Figure (cartoon, chains in turn purple, green):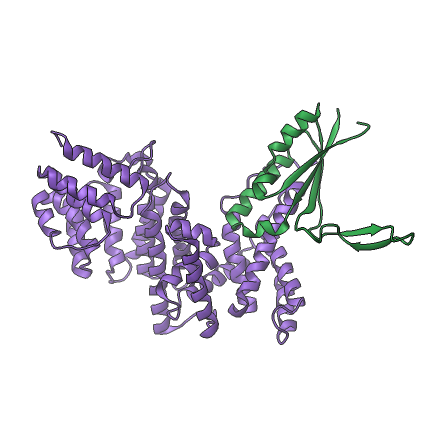
Length: 413
Length: 112
């Protein structure tokens, strides 16, 4: 008879443990044997599925998975999967490591360090830019190719290809899990932050209810950001990134209504914002103020913090001006236009984005349509919304656009 | 109350297609089902195909398991209590095993 205990495990336990156990095994066996380590981790989970229903989940499921994955790795090395030479060395290291128990403070510190090294390897400049994110999600995040494909609205084959390329680079360039130093560390940290922020934005671009895997990306980005922000290599910029992501993620629950339709920022029910994430965001925001550096992450964090506190469009516009001066990209210009419209009116906002070109980017067309509608130029607005509908966007975004088209056609705006 | 055996067959490599997140979900579902009140006993069998003893013309001999030709193996069994065969079948239909590519054979245990 099964023991009387809960049958629900800690949320994302397997996914998170898979990342960290893999990181630890990779540290012991080296990146050359990453696939063996991945199989060992998978084996531990199959074993859990086969034994926990009868025996009940162990008191420390993470430690159980850790130990069983070690045993599976030991078996694989014994079957000579590592190609002989160093197998005695590997067996000794694995047997010793199998004794340690996750959950104890010094072990946790070691495991966090392992994860950090793995993330940094995934973000190595030798790996092509778009493969870094995919590799980080697969290796450090415990995501499956299929899940990554769904989150990126890409095909499984496309994602698998990126992984193949990344793994080939790891082998060819003989990448290690050594922590880089000096200037190289700075570069790698920049790359890791880019990967994390990209991951976050990919997740944030979709809407809750549509596909939860996308919000999982946001939280994985937060988890990886937290890993760096709580390590010895943290910097004010890392805290700015964390602040920015936490404050934006806090708004996730309020971004759609019960029907799954979009709610614009100023119409959101602020009581639905995640207060815990807001607190996390402000904690990191404060820490981002150490030193004199003002990075783009800082300015974006300031924008998110302003939104979290109050509605202050003049300040938001001022911050976007600052951001635009640092990075005059079309996307920044577009966001700035929204603030211009609030402060100085739709005509000026429209003028500010007249020359922008972002082919296939629905948001530019949606904003343009919105401004045209505000100016009473209905036909042009409807044309913009229709064009936007032809771009890649989520189902709630489509419904939003259709509502706008309907509005453009009616007598009142 | 009559007892029934549920024999759970599957291809063990099927689980390897699942992501960690899906493995966790599967584990939770199997755990929840196994805790249901009508389950009298349940056991998992090791994932190899086992050994089979055959007559071998009067000199019984062990050979590799019966399923070496197919990928499906008997992976576990339950003994459950149920008022009728129909009800037992209904209970089996609700098991998560089929979601994960498995099949269940329901058999009544005599003398119960």
